[in-house]
Image 1 (cartoon, helix red, strand yellow):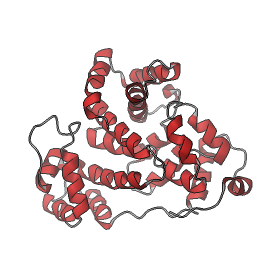
Image 2: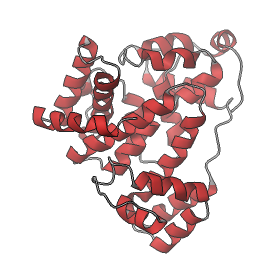
Image 3: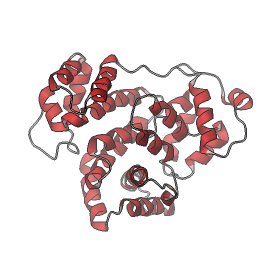
Image 4: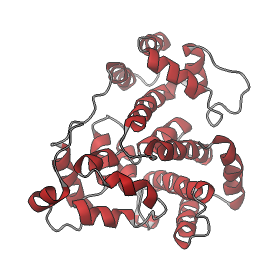
Amino acid sequence: MRRIGGKKAWRKKHIPNMHTIKDQIQVAEQILKRIDVPLIPTEIIELQKLFAKSEMPDPKKIHNLVASNPMLASELISLANLPSLNGNSNVKIKDINSAIYRLGNNQIKNYILSIYIKELLDKNRISGLSYHSRNIAVIASMIAKYSKFINQGEAYLLGLLHDIGTFALTEIEQDYGQTFVGKLVEHYGSHKREYERFGTTHSAMGYVITKSLSLPNSFSQTILLHHEHDLSRINNEKLRHMVAVIELAHALLLEQKHKEGKCPENKKLLQNAQQALQLNDEGIASIKAGLSDFLL
């Protein structure tokens, strides 16, 4: 990506007074026209095309696409061996076909895209973003075991993608990244700060970016709304559920890693997400019990 100029110049020329999500999306679109977004590797594009034609493509074609990219093949095998995704199996995966079988042929497109997103996160300027997003992905995939609307592969990808809008905001203002991760404990307050600085938010930026990845609309909409403080305002049940998965993952990560479990805001975040997901206390306890083994 190339840097497109300082905050003051951008604000003066491009940011009117805005109050709606629609306005934030429009500003995000303007910003992204001025930024070089990383290209998606050919293998990933071709894989998305395969699944666009059929929900269950020929396994040989999937294997060949993965095998043509050594990095992709290696990362896929590593992903298949993650404890949170392999059902705690003691059998170590060593080849592509076994990795595809374990992760699920019908979900492999999500895992392949997850590998690409992980690579982007690892190269990002924001220290701690990869660590945070990968932990959210792991927790979201655990929550998905209790979901009727989203499976583990989708939840893992969504967790990795949820803060991808920060890429663009870092290009506008380099010091943005210095405070982003440190302010994660203020889940509901981040949008206000970003709006005041940029006229948009990382969620709106993420919405626009993910629209270009040919993902289901529910993915982009979840990313747009993943800091919503009143989940009851989301009328669509599936969308409300997906947003709650990401918000619950945030609450549990803050409690486990940032010692913010007693923070009133985080308690509200956890309670609201738990209610939206209709998860009982036993379900929450079960998820918490496994976190220490899986988190980075």
